[in-house]
Image 1 (cartoon, rainbow, N blue to C red):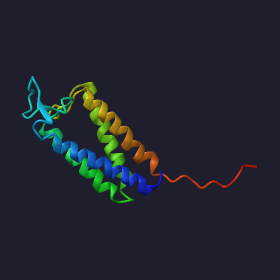
Image 2 (cartoon, one colour; image 1 turned 180 degrees about the vertical axis):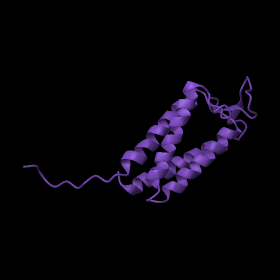
Image 3 (cartoon, helix red, strand yellow; image 1 turned 180 degrees about the horizontal axis):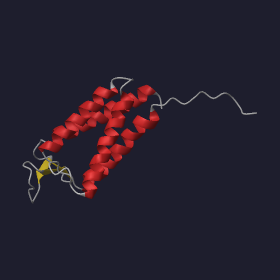
Image 4 (cartoon, one colour; image 1 turned 90 degrees about the vertical axis):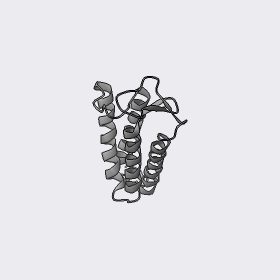
Length: 139
């Protein structure tokens, strides 16, 4: 995968995260949970994904970081590596115990964080490396 493709995917992924963060604040798209948790503003985005104001702001910040990093060919690999680490910590934290108590996370969120970690990890560690040109048939 060439560098410009990695950048476009990273920017697109960032836009998705910013939109998810914004949608989390919109009543009707985010429905209140039947059992409100310790953090005010908890709800279910699309009736599935646990969110609250901390989680929504985190989505906007992560999305903005991906957009910012994706705009630079020199930063795109680094920002994807960092985000892969962030998503990996969120997955581990949500599985072991809600270490991130201030952030509403449920199993569907954890699944999406796994996918996000895999995508950003691939883009950061694998996709941006140029493959060497083929030298012709081996003799």
